[in-house]
Amino acid sequence: MLDADERAILFLCCENHPVSCAACGRERRIGSLRKRRSDPERWLCPKCRTDVTPGVVAHTRVCRYFLGRKGLARIAAAPPPAATA
Image (cartoon, rainbow, N blue to C red; front, side, top):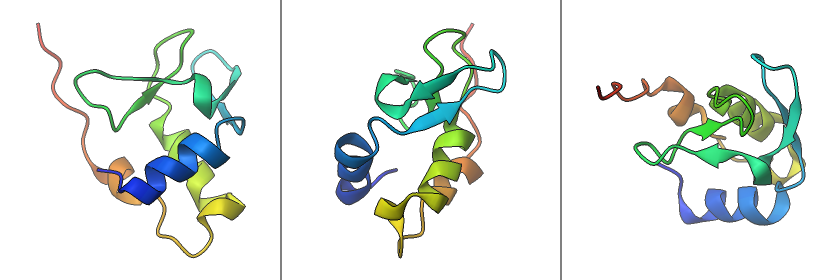
C-alpha cells in the first residue's frame, strides 16, 4: 500500500511523466493511467488495460522526486489478485 507521501508525489509531481506499455507499445502519462477497482495499487494502460505497474515502479526508482525513498518495490513484489469469474 502506498503511504500518503508516495501518493502525493505520484499525483502532484509525476502526473506528466511517461510510462511505456509493453503490450500496445504506447507511452502514457502516469496521470492518465487507470487503477483497478479490485486492487487500487495496480495501474492499467487506458488503451489495452494491460498492467503497467512495473513501469510505474521503475519510474519511482529513477525519478528525482523519489530520490532517497525506497520506491514502490513492495507493490511490484505483491502478487496480483485472483480474477473473479
